[in-house]
Image (cartoon, rainbow, N blue to C red):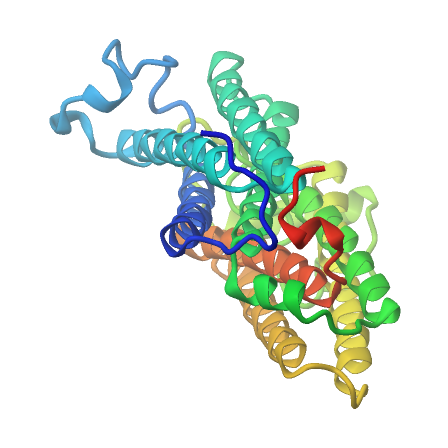
Amino acid sequence: MRPTSGSTYEPHPALRLFTRLTCYATLLLILAGGMVTSMNVGLAVPDWPGSYGHFMWALPFSMWKGGVLYEHSHRVIASGVGCLMILLTVWILRVDPRPWVRRLAGLALLTVIIQGLLGGMTVKFMLPTAISVAHGMLAQIFFLLTIALAYSQSVERAMRARQPVGSSPTVRAATILLLVLTFAQLAVGAVMRHSMKHHGGVAVPDFPTIAGRWIPSFNAEVVAQLNAQRLELAWEGEDLEPEIGRPDVVIHVVHRAGALVLLAATAVLSLIVLRQDSTPGLLRRTVYMLDGLLAIQIMLGVFTVLTQKGDLVASLHVVTGAAFFGMTLLLLLRSSPVGIADSGLPS
């Protein structure tokens, strides 16, 4: 039944738990997708929507090995997240009278459907970089939508709706800027990963220098030197093209520079939040978690270079980036005022 109007919407504990489950499942899906890309096994299962002619969930376990294990597991987790999102949308439409939450659930469901189609297209068109990047970035957007839905059902937000508190426009503006910068950095990282999938490793194998230089250069001499360094690392693989070009070096250096920009933006945001005496303790704790995630992310980025894109390290780098992106959104939600839409009355 369609919910009737009431004085204030009180989130149901089971629904609140289900929204969090969907969030965590989405983060697991991003990790699984990262492993597929890191290991370059996106075509281990060459057909779609089936798997070697079988219904996806009916593939014999005897075939779950090697690259098929990672690619097929990614598909199964993705379909599971899709099912969770369908159930969550139906549940919200039945019990939550707030129009903006209902629209948000519908948008999240549409996003995960498009995400699934993009995943199929990556297989059908043999892993084109553009579609692969769009697939990866839409996963990040969907993750943010699940966080927003989870927050809409949280006790914290319900309490803020009953007892509105002030918020700082400066904190919100700085958080929005960090959110945009993080999205751009994730996009650059996605382009770098997917454009390098047939080359193996990373374009610049030394750190913190670039081909032994502190000031980056992209001339033919530097590219040749980087190719020589990579050759010494003895990359092997039947489908790998060891030679890299200038675009590969440029996108790698841009990604490193983006990390420095994010570090500066996060530091400024942290100072803004922590220097305000009126800042709620919840915002302070959120900033501490944001700083911690960034520190872990930078260390994983360094290890990704030093290990030449070790599969697990690179994948953890991807999922930590998603967690940082999501924590930034959570900070924005917690620092934004709760409007009249939270009264629970249909409008």
